[in-house]
Length: 382
Image 1 (tube, rainbow, N blue to C red):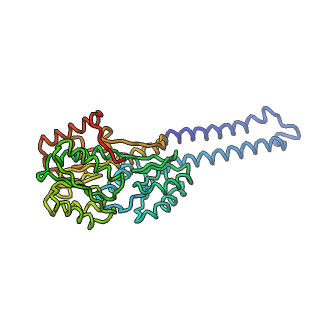
Image 2 (image 1 turned 90 degrees about the vertical axis):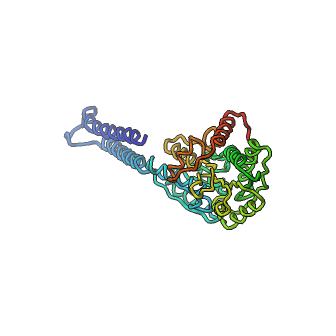
Image 3 (image 1 turned 180 degrees about the vertical axis):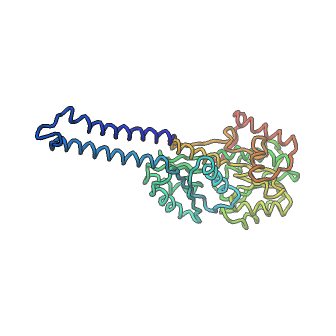
């Protein structure tokens, strides 16, 4: 697209220059100069030619600036959620989507790792006021309040927000039906538990995280009506693995032998506890099964796919500020043990899953197909 635009602009520039040159040549023919001689030019003729020259020069300058703009590498801004890179989950999978755009689309990008919610507004404004970014991607529901303000201040700047809605024409709100993917994890938990008790550790007690739990509970009970789903526990923070570990240990002491974790970097502590206790764990956002052999499956939230799609739209000029809400049917959420996903994650993290029993995989696939077809309506916390 950029090459085509540059060609068109270059053609216009050439035509303008040629047109100006022709005007210089034919002008004396159409309007023969009066005496005293052929070298004499009237003031009116001079003024007309000077005006043509100035206009051509201005058009040329504008065209050259447009060519430079079209050939300049496109930039993307990424504002991560608190907790930062290294969570092997939400932030890392978001970053992977931008890295993919760098490798495949040739974009450049800048990113920041806020330490507190109060920093979001400043980072958003700092990125937006430069005018350098085709899109600014904001990771995490808790950026919504700041973005509602900043998007209004910079209406010509494209933004994407993950996990929350900002009702502005320049904001793409990216939502994921995590309850549907969590249902698939619940199916596995309900089939493999030996104590008949399964648990859940969340980052914060908010509807966004409750949605994981509600889907997980429904999946476990769909496949195993006799299962006991222990009351969910919440860390209260995204970057407190010590507390995450304590909560998972507490669930294990209550008899929970299969624990689903949706807590960002705090969840790494929970999964560590799963490993130490030798019970079954389930990861989230990205495939976390490579961390410990006890992690049997993960519920990937394909933020990388959503982020990449928004960057492509911004580059092509097809970006639309609207709500995007996708789940199992669209493969924005799912289970890393499904055939269409397993190889992708094993290649990404260079490991191999331990095989699951055929009846477990078959049941997960059945649930996936029924959700996609609308035959199973998964409850939601929203």
